Image (tube, rainbow, N blue to C red; front, side):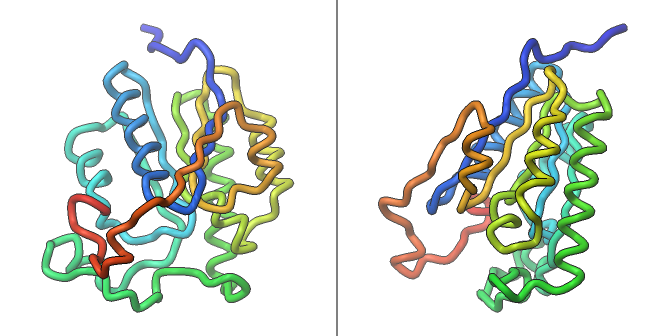
Length: 198
């Protein structure tokens, strides 16, 4: 039996300096599941498995798969269990100009995996979470990413998230949404909250 496919797949970009980019992309995953589509999420620069969406996908949605290609938070197990919160140590984040060989290799592996998944004819929705930041932090060059996007099959939707979307990515996209910060609880000293921010 032939599975349901998208009638037309596009390229979407969620960028900007406010929260909600990954959340919007993950909302699309839930919508896709509701219509019988298969999704694959690749996270660039994220390696800690305490995101609530991941736990949901593992429990409820076998048609959703994901892989992470980033640094692991040293407290991720405690955070996932609800026994700790992020303390802002920075060990799970790459700073501009300070990428290690392991960071660069992780980004290359993630991009190679994205191509494999996109061309596999197995998935309808491909989320490239934080790809824009991987480009901004010089973990990848923009031309290989554009080359990947130019090979996108017609029935695959690709969603790219992360701040600092380069102009070339904005140009090739069919839909670009910018999340703009107006107010943020972090500015009042309220840290990330389990079940809300992660």
